[in-house]
Image 1 (cartoon, helix red, strand yellow):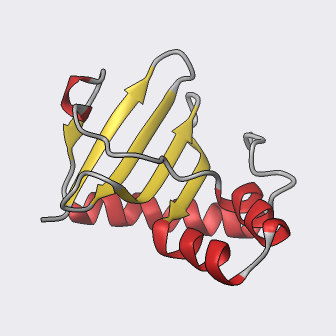
Image 2 (cartoon, rainbow, N blue to C red):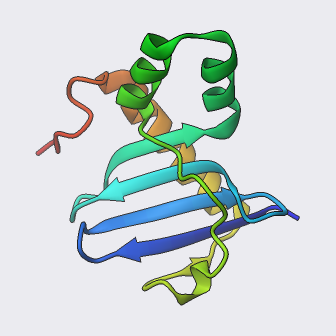
Length: 116
């Protein structure tokens, strides 16, 4: 059963949204950083596997610069993280779409900059 969750890391001021598979592994991840919730990650497992299996190290590095790094390992215990909660699928999809659009349009060289 697919689940959609969010967690908060106060140290880095980052909200993370995950789409989890049956084994609690992230199939998609969005990280929004800072008070403006600037997208810094919008990575998908399918794309990562495609790069790994059909690209080279340069292709993988380019993907990670553009869309960030997907969490590895299962996220069992996510419920114990600060600000953690399940979110509805439609909320995750809206956040995902906005983050992907922003990261795709800004390019890897400016993705970590906040806009005024």
